[in-house]
Structures are given as structure tokens and as C-alpha cells.
Amino acid sequence: MDWRGWAEIVFTIAVTVAVGWPLGIYMARVWAGERTPLDFVLKPVETGFYAALGVDRNKGQNWLGYAGAVLAFSAAGFVLLYALLRLQGLLPLNPQGFDGLSPHLAFNTAVSFVTNTNWQSYGGETTMSSLSQMMGLTVQNFVSAGAGLAVAAAVARAFAADRGETLGNFWVDLTRSVLYVLLPLSIVTALALVAAGVPQSLIANVTAKTLEGADQIIALFPVASQEAIKQWGTNGGGLFNVNSAHPLENPTPLTNLIEVVSLNALAFGTVIAFGCVAGARKEARALLAAMVILVGLGAAAIYSSETLTPQPAMIAAGITDAPANMEGKEVRFGAAASSIWAAQTTGASNGSVNAMHGSFMPLGGGVAMFLMQLGEILPGGVGSGLYGMVVMALLAVFVAGLMVGRTPEYLGKKVESREIKFAMLAVLILPLAILGFSAIAAVLPVALEGLLNKGPRGLTEILYAYSSAAGNNGSAFAGLTANAPWWNTTLGIAMLLGRFAYMIPVIALAGAIAAKPKLKPTAGTLPSDSPLFVGLLIGIILILGGLQFFPALALGPIVEHFQALAASR
Image 1 (cartoon, rainbow, N blue to C red):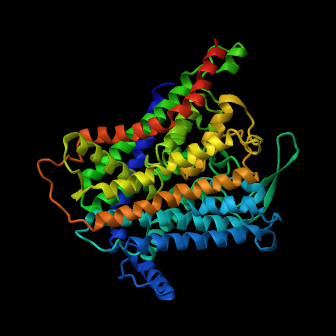
Image 2: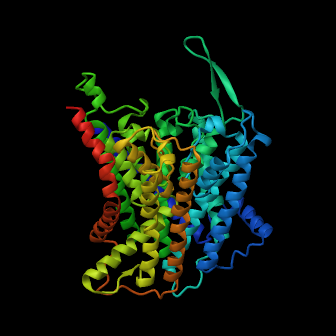
Image 3: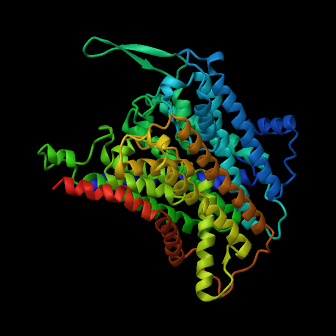
């Protein structure tokens, strides 16, 4: 650990926020239907799409209509992707000759990409054809992220409305989010990655000569195009099994910086867009500050764990002055770049990795898991992180209102029992899915067959898998063989709960907020742009996460940490 590592962490977060800020201002214009610099190219495409599908862009939807459209669109995407994966062996653009996926793996994968989770129980280079990657997975990378942005736009309009009846039109929000935001960003980023050495090819593979003179077959895919939307859409699913630790997905420190910045920038940008649309720019900056503080603390904790905690294997080998724990890390990135990536990918619902989280020291892996358990709101997925943080803000002002005996308000809207019921319904889904499935898996023989390790490490593997699935993250903890009927099915159900059992109460909450009158702040209104509010918001996030998950964490990574300390003595 030295100042250069800390500087790299601070620099990465600063660049990410700096990129996300103007993107948020631009995205607010997209949500509001205002003119953009891309209108001359994309406006005819947008208009043609509405005409072809019979969408009236001026017709708004109430919360039931909006939620129904989200569910119908996602269900259709699941059916089409499931069919594509099952029939993969009979379809073209399959130069490797891969067979179709098994029913349980196809179910898991289709749910994973439709829910913006991108959990992968398979190795991409040995399972998916080019057609499945492009027409199936990459398309869902765009539209599942677009659905999250659409719901965030609806939530922003709810706070701007004064006795409003509608939240906007889901089909318009989805179309504009994909056309005007995700597609341009992905095209520019894909070209930059190709220029930096990331391949983009439909060739099955090439043969290279090793230094020993042997032949090595290197699998090729259209990597750059999927890598771009994988990061901008907080998707995370990689073409290769080791994700962005693979040199063809992430060959250099420059590509690493591009990818880790694009991983979080748009999610930060949605907070700025929310402030612009809702007329609450200062309050949005407070939300952004809470996100940055917590993800920075997470990165610092992981970096400290990887550089300060004694490594038992090194001590056993007689190496007492070992540097940072480099097990599972790429030497071209090092501990600092791996730590900030781990914090940003688990604070977001991204799940891509440039180091193996299962190889982190116990506390390092435990912090990454805890960031997911906080609700994937730091800054979370594109759209989903924003509305998750708004739910936490409503809970924060509600708690503050209880302290002083006043009806709480947030952004000019009174927060009453109905809104809090919707908010609590949303936030209780995560512990229910994570702890409920983990408890069953910890005692079920068919589930335990998939574990590599027993004891605290085995429990950590189980907790991490369901935290990743229910949090719509998608990163994995090495050691769990998840490509089995039990794991593929239950993880798929956890993904569905984490996405839609959270999203639908949020849309209902937005409908309730929109219908309320817009009030001016009074002397008794808690300022939601002050350092006091930021501290209260951080406290609510940590207390919810700590009270719900600390007992389980104490039996997993925390016990393992003390075991590592004892073994190093």
C-alpha cells in the first residue's frame, strides 16, 4: 500500500463522477423529450419506431399501465431469449458448432440478462455462439438497461408533478433511453476499445505459436461491441469466463480505466438527471455525495484488506514481507485497480470483474458482498440505483420526521404511510431473497454438492451467490459450481425477485408521489441538501444493511478473517 494506490482510487472515482455529470444533464433533456444534438440522425428512427408499433408518444400511462408495460416487455424478452438459447445449435452464426443450452441453464441465462443481472453459470467462450452473443445477450444488455432508465425517468417526473395522473410513457422512455443514450455511448466506446486492442470479429478462432513453439487456439468473438454496453448498461456479463480479467476483454491499463469509468458514470449521471427533471439539483448532489462516500469507503476497505492483512500461505512459505495479495489479480492492474473495480462493480449492479473476488482476502471479499447487500445503490444500476437511493431518502426523511413529530416531506411531497409501505415492501425483498435462499441452500444436500469449500468459506460462497443474484449484480465467488438445476433455478428466481419485486413497488410509489400536490418548504422541513441529511441517509443505508446481514456475515467472511489471522501467526 502506498500513495500511488490511494491516488489511483481517488482519481478513478473523480473521473467517473466528472464524466457522469454532463451525461446526466444530457439525459435529463432526453427524458424531457427536448431537442438533442443527435436529433438529425435519430429523430426519424424514433418516429418510425412509434409509427410501426402504434405508440402514441403523447399518451401518458398511470402507474399500473407503466408497470404492466415493463412486465410485458420483460416477459416477451425472456421468451425470445430462452428460445434462442435452446435452439442455438440449429441457428446460423455458430462457427464453433455449440449445441443449445440445457433447460435450466437457458432459464437462468435468459432471466439473468432480462433482469440486467448477467450472472453467468457458463463459460462464454465455450458455450455461446456469435448469434447468441449478439442477437440475444447484447440486445438484452441494451433493452434491460433501457428499462431501468425508463423507470428512473418515471420516478423523476413523479417528484416534478403537481397532482399528476401519469408517469410518462414506458415505450417512449425505453426507446429514447436506448437510442439517444446507450447506443451512442456504446458505439464510441467500442471504437475506442478496438483502437486500444480489444478484438471485434466473427471468426471462430485463430492459431498462435507459443514461445515453446506449440500451437495455441485463441477464441475470438465480437468483443468490443459487447464490452461497451456491458459497462455502460451496468450489465457485467463477459464474453470470456474470467470477464474483464481476460486480456482480450481488457488488455491494458488504458482499457481498464475506460471500462471502470463507463461502469459507473451513467449510473451517477442518472442522479444528476433526476435533479434536473425534478427541479432538485442541490438535493440530487446530496444523493450523489452519499453514493461517492460509501463507494469510496468500500474501495478503501478492500484495498486495505488486500495490502495489510497477512497472507497465511505466504507466512507458511516463510515469506514475511509479502506485498499486496496478488492471488487472482492481474499484474497489469495490481491491487489498487482491482480494489476500486471491485468496489464500483459491487456498489453498482454491474458484476464485471478484473480480478477474482474469491481470491480476495476474507474481509476484501466480504466488503464486496456487503456493498451488494446494501441494495445496489452505490450508484447501482443505470436507473435502478437512482430509484433505490430515492427509496432510502424517503426512509431517511420518515425517520427524521418521527424524531421531531412532523409529517416528513421530500422534494415538496409529503411522505405518508402509503409511500412508506411501498418503500418497505421494496427494501425487504432483498434480505428475504438472500437470507431465505441461503438458509435453505446451507442445509440442502443437493445445493451443498456445488460447494468447493466447507465451513465459513462455504457459507460465504452461498451468501455471495444469492447476494449477487438478488441484487442483480452478477459477479461470482469462485468455488461454487452453479451450473446445476438447483442453483440455476433458485438463482433465477432470486434475480426475478430482485428486479421486479423491487421495481413494481417503486413504480407504485412513484404513482402515489405524482398524485400529491407540490408543496413549498416550511420552517419545519428537513433540508435534504445538507450535510446532516447526507449523514442521516448514510446511516439509514448502513443500519438497514448491518442489521439485516451482519449475523450472516459474522458466520462467513468475518470468521474466516480471524481464521486467516490465526493461521498467519
